Length: 263
Image (cartoon, rainbow, N blue to C red; front, side, top):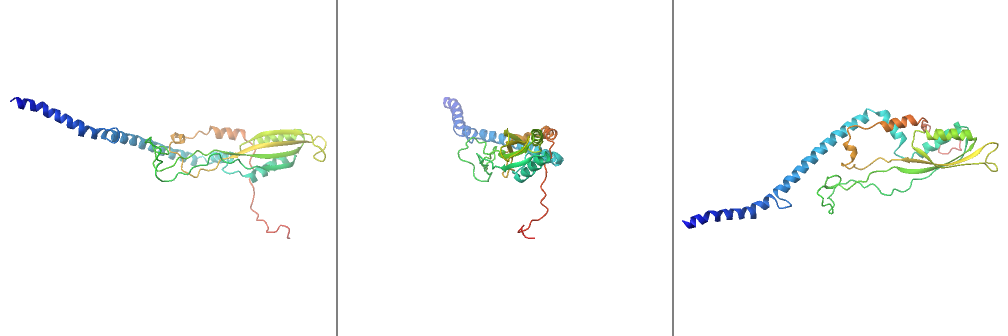
């Protein structure tokens, strides 16, 4: 009888030991137990919901851009995707001539080398050093990180000769040009020798221009842009209100001759 009484707590102790030794580690062991896997599943569901929201935002933003062709034109004209040095030379020559000034120097420099090159997002195994569980590129396994593109700056040396008031008129037109620009240096001096006559002055300027290359790699899904449902057009409105000097477009309709000195 006493043995039966002692058998009950002994079986309970054995059952508890089995739970501790076999069942509990299967539930949670700090790495790949049921509780840990449930937590990972919950995170993946949250991530999936966020990606769905961002996908819907992309569709809304794309629809807004498709319905705003004029705004897109203003923006890409103000900050083009290439230097367009021929366009700059043509426009500065035209503006100087239109202000009754003579151009004595006009040259376009090359942009400085990019400090950090964009890294292509390519499929492949995740980087071994990443132990955060979030993956790369915002949690997407198999992609390398991508640096954000930055505008490339370059300088234009521009010198003209003419009256002071006409120089002021020219600088005002350049400032209002429908493309981002700025004056880095400005020097006005009296001409010497055959450089000019009468009240003419020589104006030497170094202008700053830039451009932004199109991204040719996948963007980071964690980019704040994907959190927007609508683009703000305020900046484009400010450009339209402050930039009144139209960009002249080069006309390259006529084909040239192989030898222009022949009749």
